Image (cartoon, rainbow, N blue to C red):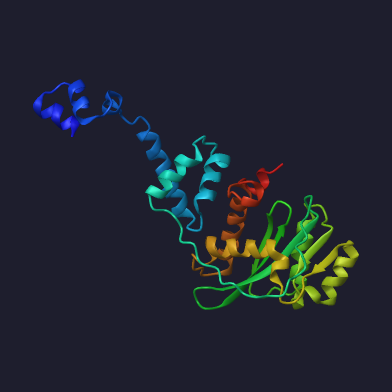
Length: 262
């Protein structure tokens, strides 16, 4: 209203500010960060479009730790809300369960590896499985093996390939699946002097690290893409695993990717 009065009636700025009871500083103020705000908005739109499971925290950690941008988190969050990028929070169903044994947390790399299976389908309806292995300390993804059938010998082969370039873990944490309780797998672990930590039946929270990794795999790419062949699945999994270890921020690591943690 003050600016319109000055433009139409030719009244002085001092008189208009006194009439409308505003300061001359407020009248003359002009935003100087519009270009930078547009850059932040472009980053947020691009990050949430590439990974729809990314909320504000992961986007901010990516900008701060991976892209090394120094923007304040309040400013980024204000633009994040203005763009209506807030993710819907799904309410949790409260279930009464027996208290399981506490989760054993590692204190150094290659102390405990966790592994588990996942299931999905190709575009022609054929079912396939993923065998996932992570290092619990830094949540580092070690392997994602795709196959129509992943028996015990295939599991042992994947672990032998890992041990060619990784230090031997003290223990391997897994559920009570037939591939993990077989005589071949137990004998392999004894020869390697690796302890097998089986979780309690029906207590997947005792294997929380790999279960959380499975969820990330499911919502980041497995449920988003329809693959025509097993080779496409394996190629995409290998590329995503590199991105997960080198570029994707992780809350457990203070917002840094697993391989950026000292």
